[in-house]
Each structure stands twice: as C-alpha cells, then as structure tokens.
Length: 268
Image (cartoon, rainbow, N blue to C red; front, side, top):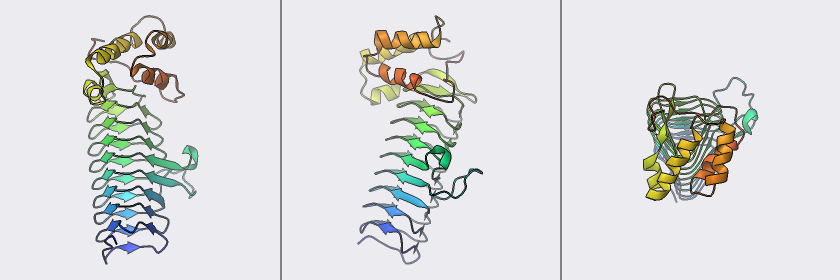
C-alpha cells in the first residue's frame, strides 16, 4: 500500500492507485484519479475532474485542477488530464478546460514543469516538454513534443509552439513558432533554428543543413509566404523535419506566424 499521511485530506470519492503516495497536508478532491506510483510530496492541492498518470511526481504547493482563471467559465464539468512520468515542481498551477476549448486541458508524458510554471485552461501539451521557472501559458496554447519554454516567458492565448522549438527566457510570444524554431525577445522574433534541439532529436549534420536551407527558403523575400510554403513542400517536403514545418504552417490558426527579426542567425 502507498503512503497516506494522516494529515492529508482525501475525499472518499477519489480514485487512488494502491501504490500512490500522498504526503503531509495534501488535499485531494472527490473526482480526482491518481495512477500507479503517483507521488504527491506534500501540501499539494488537487481538485475537480483531474487525472494524474502513472509515476508522475507533484511537489509542494502545486495547485492542479482548480477552476480556470477565465471569467467566461460557468461551472461546466471540464477536465485536466496529466500523463505519465511528469515532474511538476513547487507552486506550479494547472487549470482544467472550458466550454470554448473542448472542456479539456491535456498534458503529455515525461514533461518537466519547473517552479511557478502555469498552464491555463484548454492548453494541449505534448511529450517531453519543459517549462522553466515561472513560464506562463495563456488559455488554448498548444505546445508540441520536445519543446522548451524558457524561464519568465509568457505565451499569448491560442498560440502554437511547434515540436522541438525553443523559447528563450523572458520572452513574450504573440505568434506561432514553427517546429524546431528558436524564438526570443520582449516581442519575440525568430532567431533561427534550435540547433541543439535538432541534434537532441537525432538529426544528423546533413539533415540540419537541409533544415537551414528550408528555413532560408521559407523566410526569403521572394514570392508570397503561401507560394514559398508550396515550393518548400514540393521541393523539400520529403526531408526529415521539413514536413513538420510545412504541415504546421498549413494548419488552421488564429495567430500569425512568428518571423525572423533584424538580428536572426541568417542576417534578416
């Protein structure tokens, strides 16, 4: 049997795996589900229709599943679903969804949420994502697999962060960031590609060169963006990583695309 500290308050309706551990002064609501091997270290508050997947660890003073910080929220039955093997550090907050976003906030597997990170209502977070200290996602943000959001950064509502992208610390992200892009700045611009992220994702030197060439083509001054995307898909769409970029740009979005600034790695 897992540890249930006598100071923890656990509603009798909660569904808790036999080997889950609930530390001192935690509060667990009646609609909460804790998977196998979950650890709530201490002073963790979990509310609402929240499901935490196997082996996820939650550290002191995290608040998960309490009602969204959205004035339009009307008490509808929404959910927060957290995957397996996540590390949710101190003072992290995650809110469930709203009617306007499908009633679901969803976190993938093997993510790290550092101290004070915030995931707002209706966000969709992929696998192996890192949010550094005090990184903030507004409502309806999508973050792809293996993306990293630097400390003290803020992501505008409805923005999409592509897989493998890197957001520099203290950045304000108003626009969609392409897969494997590197964006930073108070009003962030693209600074090139996330070369370190590409290497970590298994891209070889020649493939990284291909991605750089695709980047140059995508953000050249020739033709329109739509025409450049079509050319990229036609000429380089079969190359590793390029298809991710093309499909990302062609997908529906309410936000514009984050583009290179005057000091990006290619001199634009």
